Image 1: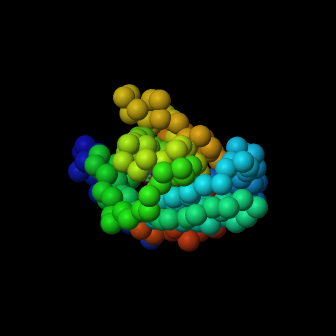
Image 2: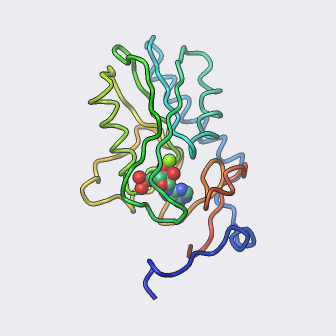
Image 3: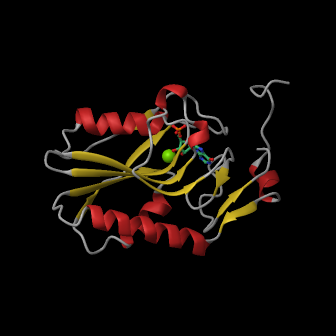
Length: 193
Ligand code: IMP
Ligand code: MG
């Protein structure tokens, strides 16, 4: 059977097989490290504009932004999707009702959950660079999965990243499997998913 016709396990089947990849403590350590890098890079900026990307980045963004409390930040959420309910990217990006203020003289920091094929990151970076007139655009991602990057998007790399992972489908701390498990406070994976 081809992978396109194989049926995926249900979330309740998955639940039994979750293995911890990173604990809450390990996540906190890496988020703190990235927060320090961002604080250092943006210490002289008066116009930092954070854009957490819903839904997957909600938990990472909340923890990261709390650690950036010593600088002035304007925050606006956007929602884009590229996954349906499967574990493979659908190939097209859907942006939902994006309304943003004028970003002239703003330094945009996109906050993502994971850079996988690179399609979403590529779309977001182009959108903020070409359409919104921002002064600078950078990307902070909880995960980077470089082994999955499309051949033509090899140059896409987060400016800040907490963890690099190999070809595993990961779940928890905002990341979902069929819209479930986002609430897990740790990161898990399932073998052979
Ligand atoms: P892209 O393929 O780089 O465009 O990634 C698109 C989106 O797919 C990410 O922002 C995630 O929301 C989702 N995604 C990619 N890999 C995983 C994963 O391992 N677990 C959960 N979601 C993922
Ligand atoms: Mg995402």
